[in-house]
Image 1: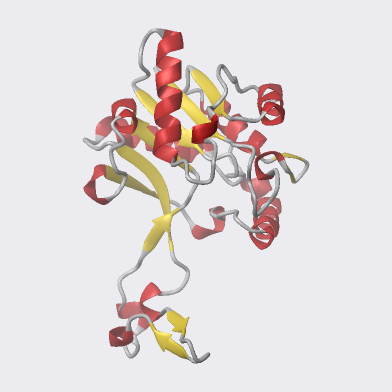
Image 2 (image 1 turned 120 degrees about the vertical axis):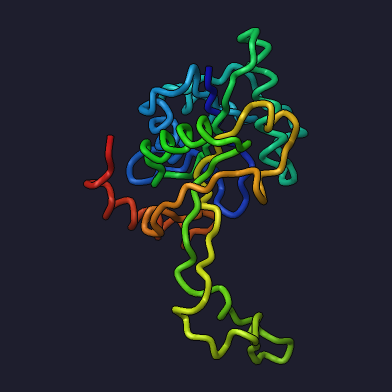
Length: 233
């Protein structure tokens, strides 16, 4: 059996009430819930929250909220692994059995695609790894990054690459910030997602937008509006 967990605490500060703010006509958390349900991979789609309004909205869109997240896991310092491990423990108690695989899906991932969730699950089942999650490439060579100095000038992070042709630089990737498939045992043991313990799922940059600021939000809405006709159900 598989479990989907959508972490959605109520105390977002940079974008107040971010997890249920209206995005292209409905609460942003609805997109994650609906994608999880359409995948037909999960015994249950659970929202882990400390907030009664978020819980009510999650239920309206088909998720369940069988427990409320404790305060110590709902502050600014609570980590994803701890939150998912708590959810797995609670659900295992209710089901009287532990889910084989768990997928953590972020509440603010409106560009998430069902086919990516399915691909991640299939990879995790066939590879001897703990986790699988989507990644995408940086749009500009990270080796050419610059920083500001104390006196207002600029200097390169990697001066050794400043005269290297961009086509000769190794491509770099980053976490797409949409979902994390994992063996439930790996989440429960707080096993790290880095190094050789995870399988990357490459997805194109135009389907990725981290949402931490109002500018991010606007950019995500623009991408969603452009991509909506192409989304596979």
